[in-house]
Structures are given as C-alpha cells and as structure tokens.
Length: 413
Ligand SMILES: *Cc1c(COP(=O)(O)O)cnc(C)c1O
Ligand SMILES: [Zn+2]
Figure 1 (tube, rainbow, N blue to C red):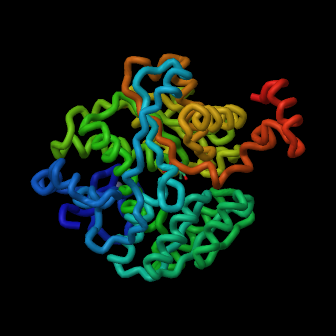
Figure 2 (cartoon, rainbow, N blue to C red):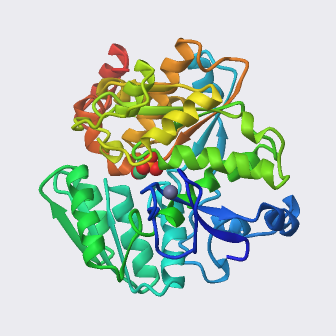
Figure 3 (cartoon, rainbow, N blue to C red):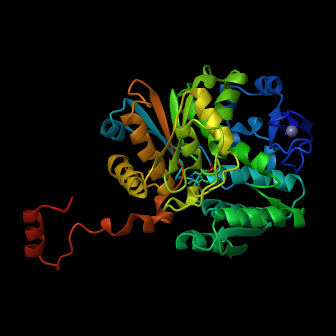
C-alpha cells in the first residue's frame, strides 16, 4: 500500500488513517481511499502494467493494498469484446462489451472481494462477512475459503436457488434472512458494530472493497490501446461500481497513463422495479428516495443505495443519463446479447443492454461514440429469470420423418 495516503471523507475532506473505518467521525460522510498520485505516476508505466499478471493485480500500484500477498482467485482482465452485431441491432457504431461474466465466481464482485479480503487479512481480520444480493455471497465465500478465513454471508431468503447452492458449496456460514436486501443490510450494520473483529466487506472495509471496481476502467482503457471510450453504460445496485469506474478513468489521467479520462460520459442502468436513482435523475431531483424492490434483477435490488446520490452526480456531471427498464425488457436484453454476441449474461446484464437500447433510441448514446457496456454477471446463475419462452425449438420422436416435418414447418424462431 505504498501509495496510499489514508482515508478521506467524501463530504468534508478530513483525513483518517488507512484502518477499518468507513464513516467520518465529524460529518458521517463516507470515507474513500486517497493516494499520492505523483508517487503512483513515478512507479507505473504502460509497460510495467503489461508485464503484470492477467488479473486485477496488474494494477496493484493503484489499489489500496500490499499486493504481493493477495487473496487471489484470478479475478479480472476479462475480455473486452467488439460487439458489431449488437451495435447494428441498436443503431450504434463502435460498441464494446466488457464481459465480466468471465470471473472466477461469474461476476464482477470477484474484483472488489479480492481487494477487500487482501486488505482485511493485512489488517489482521480472521473472519470475512457480507450482506449480499447474491453475487457477493458467492465471491466472499470463495475468496474466504482460498484465504483460510471463516465467513458469515447474509442473503435475502428469496434469492435465486443457484446462488444459494453456489455459495454454500464453499463451506462458510450462509445465513438466509427473511426479508429483502435492505433488511439484510440493516441487520449487518448492527452485527458489524457487535463484531468489530469481523471484516464486513461492504460495511467496515467498504472503502477498500469499492476500490476494486476501478479496475473495470483500467482494463477497458488498456484493452483499447490506452485510450478511453466516449461513453460507458454501467448497472447500478448500491451505485459503488459506477462511481468507482468514474474514479478509475480519472486516476488513469491523473497519473499520466491516458488522456481524456475526465471526459468519459457515464450512464447508469436500473430495473424499473428498483429504480430510485433513475427516478431521481428523471425528476431532476437531488434526493434518492428509497423504494421496496420488486424485480427479477435481484443482484441489483437495493432499494436504498448507499452510493446512489454519488452515482446521480457522476451521471449528471459527465453528461450521461440513468435509465430504467421493465422485467420483460430485461429478459429481451439478455436474449438480444446472447443471440447477437454469444454472451450469456444474468439479469443485471439484461438491465444494461436494455437500458443501452433505450438510451440509443433516445439519442443519449450516439452512433458516433465509442461505447462500452459493462456486462457484470453470468446468466448461468439466473436461468430461472428466462421463464418458459426459452426452450427447445421442437420436441420430436427419434425419426427422420419427424425431423423432416419440423424442417418443413420452419423452426420456432
Ligand atoms: C452487485 C452487482 C452490481 C452493482 O453493484 P454496485 O456496486 O452495488 O452498484 C452489478 N452487477 C452485478 C452482476 C452485481 O452483482
Ligand atoms: Zn466528513
């Protein structure tokens, strides 16, 4: 953590040591990691990064931990895929998909958890904990197993069955809570003060956790040959990922690795059934009013988003927008991405692609822009969201005649 100056309050700018702290004593504002950018600039180059491992740890100099002993399952450096077929379906020009379905536990959460648990171990914690909408549960349980830490993972009881099983298999403590994510989160805030010896990745070590999302900006710039895109579309749950992608593009410019990082337009995507930030954006309001989530996009179902206000400011100040889409549009987004690009995303990816389609249709995302859509989780964990519309084209007895009859009729697509 050579280049970390400490933690800084995002509201009043007071400084704190780089400990397990997350709120400011003076104003209750959230804390964020501050770096000595001159020192970072002196220690990294495009070449030194290229010589690093094909994971988030190639950007270790810009992360808040000592990375020679990382809790690492290989998160990051996922493909950036040129998406020409999707672009033409949406009337766009240069479109790229950041395929974060291809992480160790199938979502971008592996980036943030790898950083959070590395820092937690460095701070001496033996127990990792979290409140999760699903993907965080998978990732914390897996990384804790890898790090030989105990884990306590709290999830809403109505989570997709696969996300329960694919968390439980890693052997930590998995507690299903009768309530929605916001209830789970409130319980965890109480537990965090009762168990100061637990590292709650999205509570007391949240400032470190959230830094992991900057790698989504770092990788895109490196994969575009050290250039930044014009416009990116990012899904919003708590809003942390979106604000840190913004910070990531800023830092790349601050340390001299790219030009123009501060002019990337950043748009957000939410499900209509949980769209407090999109609603505030549409109303031109500064107040993100909490909602009770009701959507198939469970990984994004945070009704009271901790970083919602900051995400709103980022979208406004960069010239982006925040859109929302219905559950039916989410499913169509998943299917459109799958049939045009061969990428199977979860509901959050459906939210991103469907919102991109809307923003393209309304002219917010333009065909003369270089656009990146962040697809943040794999579809294999949310297959139930697809319903009965996705199935065999035909069911036949094992005879040539039966198949010929199907061909005659044409397939169901
Ligand atoms: C958690 C999650 C997000 C958004 O995370 P925030 O940083 O809380 O906004 C996006 N996509 C997927 C698949 C997630 O699991
Ligand atoms: Zn403060």
